[in-house]
Image 1 (cartoon, rainbow, N blue to C red):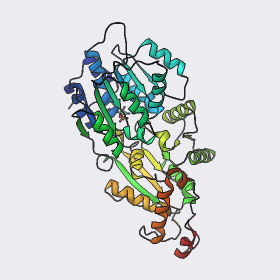
Image 2 (cartoon, rainbow, N blue to C red):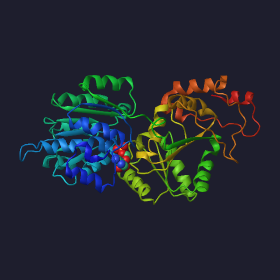
Image 3 (cartoon, rainbow, N blue to C red):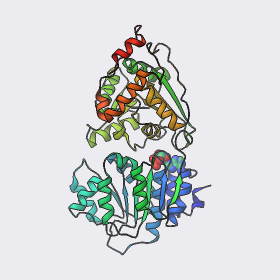
Length: 427
Ligand code: AMP
């Protein structure tokens, strides 16, 4: 199946060919004809599936096929994304795929001066990519006109929910024209997203791109059991001995990300980080340095990494496992993208065993565990069903995200600790 069979016009086919895409990805195969037919879409597709082109190409075509009144350029397609980075990247995709067409687009997001955005909006755009918070600011200041929106995209809806954007989204929905096409993309479908979708979508075409684990056959998952205190050393060893040239490393906390990147950098690994304490410019610079190969290791927190478009990323490392299994899927969505092969490596200490079994349940597979010689974890009962294990798990849950992350992790006794000792240390 080629792009030309999908009913796209010549300008778009040229843009796709410019990008070197030879055939549509599964999400594109399903989404493009449905969107061109005017259908609402509910798509379970995460970053790395080609979803951006999957909605951008048909939107460009729909807008071009039905030009608006001369002169006036109200926003006709509105794309909401959770983060600034994703907004900037989606906008870039709109510009790339729309390069042979006379449509205009811009992005508005927080963290940068609003004045330039107001000027851009005043000049008129056909396609607006926005984060909900900043868009709400523009709505309040009456610097954006959303009265002519024909197509709405909610991209990475689950992340927008996680980031607390649902109320802002609902306020924006309330001022959009009632008759419009709605496209909802989400990697996961928690209750709130299902109910949002129910109220929003009319007879949607449901697109379920099998998730990582079943779909991304190109991704190999490995767990390296290791003591917490030796994770950094092991990471440096893996990067070095495997000669990895581009590796994305996830930590749970922004301070952890910053510290790890600095330490690796001091050790000559060329590393930088991207996290919530960095401003927009710093994040953009870090991402560019990583993409260009100037730095080898990018350490990121989950929120900051959301939607990063890094092509052909071969290695993703979970320095710490995420608290929930679905975040694991988001993280490794960065590798093995669009049919390429990738490797997802997790450094797992004793305390993370329970989380690991949660992830394995979701993936419906057991992840092979390989102990790296020289990094054997210290003795401690590894059984996830042991009392100590259950206790650690419950404590982690009840503390919730931030608190549990800031707790001091117990250092497993490497020098002959026994089960009794270990339990004594547990929280
Ligand atoms: P996305 O899921 O939209 O973040 O896209 C993931 C990556 O796949 C991006 O780097 C795109 O440039 C790339 N991509 C999108 N469509 C195709 C395609 N049909 N063939 C090859 N790569 C693609």
